[in-house]
Image (cartoon, rainbow, N blue to C red; front, side, top):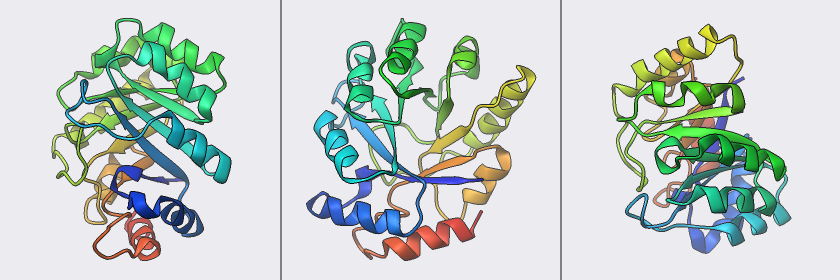
Length: 218
């Protein structure tokens, strides 16, 4: 089953509760929470209080993506706050195994993320530990970017690596996903798609229609 995880980065923060409820009612599978610190990426976004608020008010799976320079400290805190899965960047820590273990010790599943220019070999040793791999198909930091075409081949290679190791790990893809290219991403091996502006479009506010159009394009 292909799962949709809309990114709250593109939601109307003034109407965040309404947008979440509408997206859940429209049949999304997860909520993608982008956490940025202004250091690892050139932007600052939501943090632990948002995750606590979401956990209090919705049962939907919270998919927390840490784009921060100190995941060692903060990853377990997001797990404690109510995240269902916490994903950390391989580029952001020299202690990846320790961070992944700390997430699990605090009650959440763990994932590893890599940027468009990061080779897949950098995460090979961590694959037996993780519950998900997130491929960035844009350079992280801002919503609304266009999909980087060579990401498709990277997804295919990652799927082959996972199969070669005899593992069963879902691949999530984040960045520039639209109804026009989601089929390509899914065909390459992704089973979770992050969609920000393709779902939470402030211009048209048609969250329900946007979710349906994305799902119909699989």
